[in-house]
Amino acid sequence: MNTRKTGRWALFAVLWPLLAPAAQMTHSTARPSLALGVAADAQGSLWIAGLDDHSRLFIQSTNDDGKSWQPRQVLNTGDDVIAADGESRPAMAFSPDGAVVISYTQPLSKPYTGNIRLLRSADGGRTFAPPVTVHDDRQQITHRFASLAFDGDGDLNIVWVDKRDATDQSYAGAALYGKVSHDGGATFEPDRKLADHSCECCRIALATGADGKLVAFWRHVFEGSIRDHGFAPLSDMGRGRAPVRATADGWVLAACPHHGPGLAAASDGGYHAVWYGLREGVVAARYGRLSADGQPVGAVRALPDAGAEHADVATSGHKVAVVWRSYDGQQTRLRAWLSDDDGAHFVLRELAASAADNDHPRLLRNGSALQVVWRTLDGIGVYGLAP
Amino acid sequence: MVLGSMALRLNQLALLAVMLCAALPGAGQAQAAPAWQNFDLARWQAMTQPAARPTVAVFTTTDCAYCPQTIHSLATQLRARGQQAAKLAIVVMDGAELTSDLAKSHHYAMADALYAFRGAEMPLRYAVDPQWRGETPYVVLIFADGSRRQFIGAPPAADLSAFLKTARR
Image (cartoon, rainbow over all chains, first blue to last red; front, side):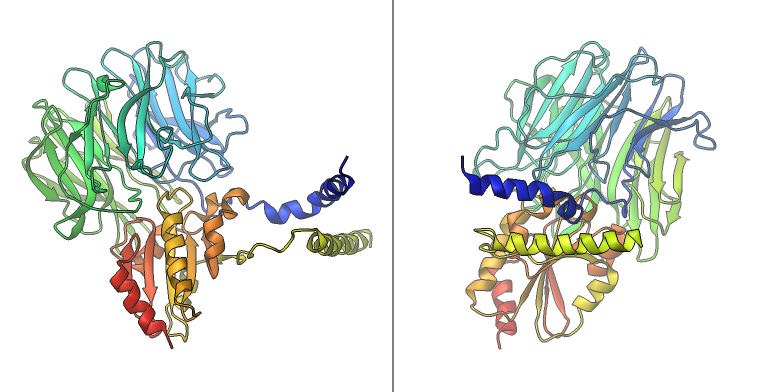
């Protein structure tokens, strides 16, 4: 036996309790994780999922548009560390029959790595099964930025950013992988690839088309490291098709934008889209229309706020709501651009302002109403959106 | 009294630990990374005051896949100049995510100064550049007179070269 090594380990074992506190720069409570997932149930209650002051995952609901909230329910997530900051937020959805699913990213110890974890309730959110890892791939690599939704057939679809194919430096970006569950998240089909070469650090937008099928819209790495956006129906998962190039800003970038897009179905069968990027020398959040197959249609418009960031879009019939946040040096402003004629005309509204640290605005459709949830250090606000 | 005695023993043990670790074969061979410091608006304002030594500030995040390569490239170019006129400072914007494992990432060891930011992001971004929307790496060349130029990603070679020429004495 190598006594020198044994002696070193013995010394390490004795000294570790003394040294460990200095070495463990674990997740600090100095900056709260404010990112929320939002969803509406069939009864019209608005639900949120986020982290509390102790970094525990909680859910909470309101029946009166945020005037009062039901007590917070802290969920059992075992020893999972949970990411809930900016683009990396919990995601929540209700099935047509009342099942609830919540996904979150569990960051791992190596840089850029994580697992997509899923919680499932079969009783409308009263109780949840322990979390499970969604993907079949169990390498300690990037599995992050999951989005999930139920399609028109009631199937649960979940899509995430995955680096299993980036085995050398020549692979641009990451891939989008996804999987489908036909029983509300109890069991899943195998992992399938939706697209190669997605951006690595941005949320993925999902929307339900006129046919009830889900489509994805994400920041892509096109040839030449151009960060325009890809579009693909989730039915393309596993088919090896190239995504449609849905935006044409031509932003060449060797960096992480940390700024994913938004997408919502239009009443004419196409889509309303919002995204952020550099176009003709101007950095801005922009709005544009896409055809049913994801092709850009008509003029692209910059949002009427040079400071707009993390915009999202939702629709209800002919109503369109675009929301974003914007910092003016003193306060963050929550603003909305609202239309009741399918985006032909918009009016600008300022919904709230706060000097406190804050989350991205989280937009949702609740029945026929459009709502935005905005969490700041001062609290959680719910704002109705009507032109 | 008991607590004081325990603290003394802990101090003695800690000193012993440091001495023993230093004596271990192989210890101290790698270049030590600078100590992590907290970053805030005041630190940024101090960093942008006129100074004898200009600074390349790299704002990064723990999930920025492009940052290690950019930091490595900048550090290599600064060292290739064979002078210590310009300082490389790294600011981790999501400092709350900086676990002990992530803090030991090799690219951080190439910095002259390491900072973890754990405050509200938007006021700091606005102070650095009102146009900055959070992209990383975000590189700011801070000239000796306090003026600065900022870039999303690595600065073009011509801009970095011009900066280093002004830094050379």
